[in-house]
Length: 238
Ligand SMILES: [Zn+2]
Ligand SMILES: [Zn+2]
Ligand SMILES: [Zn+2]
Image 1 (spheres, rainbow, N blue to C red):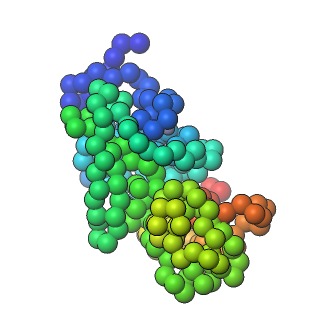
Image 2 (tube, rainbow, N blue to C red):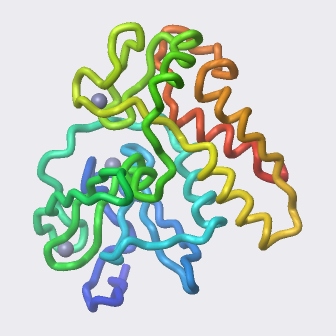
């Protein structure tokens, strides 16, 4: 297959290899704001994203929801320790970059030659304000229904009876932000005639246990996965 030339003049294979696990990534063509398109590569194994643009891309609400849906239907993530990652375009070692937006800390790995950035999906959610740490009273409520959750940062189980943070990576207990999710769906509605069934309290209930899936007793509850499922149920046509 002839190489495709990107905006930076670099050549790359049509299929991007995931810097995290080496699997071939799925290319999603998404609308960005204020206008235009961006190709985002998604690894369905690691739930990680590769952006060819170095800068943080602003996706439209519809594109954001399409990306969430692609992650939701992907199978369970394989949480691999991210050590030395290589750029899928030039093989240079990606540089770990820590950033902060409002009060949220997030991390991504960027090519030193500007080919793009590798962002685990959870970090993308943090960067875009879709994840927030739960308040102590919310953790108390969660504890009533749920024994353990999966750490959003490292995937380790967190025993809510014992731990207020992840005992492995010291990350906070965080969940999908119902308000941010609702705002995105409402912004989508403004552009379409379809009406979504937004139930912010329902999302909060699901995240805090009352509506949490009962089927997988003993499995730590994944608050990102739960958020994506509830969000998907709001969208028209479901
Ligand atoms: Zn991967
Ligand atoms: Zn590179
Ligand atoms: Zn952790």
